Image (cartoon, helix red, strand yellow):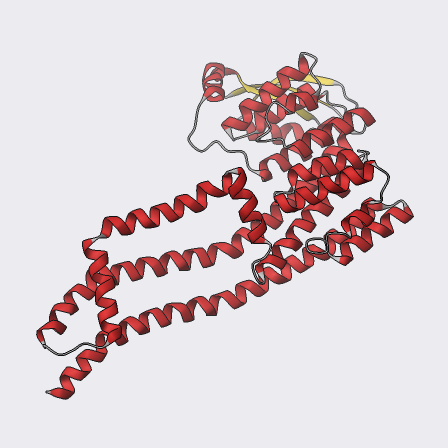
Length: 405
């Protein structure tokens, strides 16, 4: 297959040509080995097919945080190598496998080529490029240091992705065990107990209380299964839909921070997010007031958002950030306040916050590891107790029958 390409050498001189290769990846490897930086690689025989691919709609076309981080780092390298932003975006679009993301990158490239600022072009896709991301790019455009800013953004997104992955991983195992627990319970109630009930009732003996309770639950499951499904469906819908409403989110955000053990974990998580976002924004040259406003929108918890917006209002009036945050000891730790105070006094707030981030990341990792080691035996014990109670409720009357005979 033949591919036409556009590339630049180390001096920024554009090169074009045609290469016969087995795949686009082979062309990219060839150009890289030849000291050229690819801008665009197109398969000549399949322009129509390529156009169809770009317009293809898929069911699973979401763009992950990892995708955006990789995109940011590659864009940083290309712009730092003096590749014009529009051409760099086109090259990244060619290399992107996610059809939805590919289309959006091409659209952004077109907007930039037509004179739109990169930050404004990115702002058209808030589900992919957050308020934080757009503000960081805008600061890079103003300061003329866009490659460095994109590098910071990529590092930040990778760090955020790592934390989310660890939290998700820690919560997945308990969720799977809980689902198995419910399924086992339902199967026993619907298919196992009814058969045993007939045998037990034939004995004519008075059954123990535990057995009668299990029989009643089983009878309800068998005869009113639709109510069980409606109740479980309603519970799932409530926990999925209600937290997305303003009142529901506010309620769940407040409850989340008050749950024993888990509350402290989530406080550490939100303080990490606060410190990392705030530090990254300040180091990019964004003013403290603007940085606080951006962080408030990104923090993900209404309680912290309220505290941060209050801090912004007080800072505008001349108060120090540490002084304002110290009034919320319920959600802001003394360590966090102290490090912010040190940063304000030394003029190195961003580096002080980076120390806070490192501390809370370690705390988060320790908690996740501890949670995994504690929750596994607890779940196993829970399953064993459930099975044990069911077995006891069934075997106890059988034992009574045999001893009576």
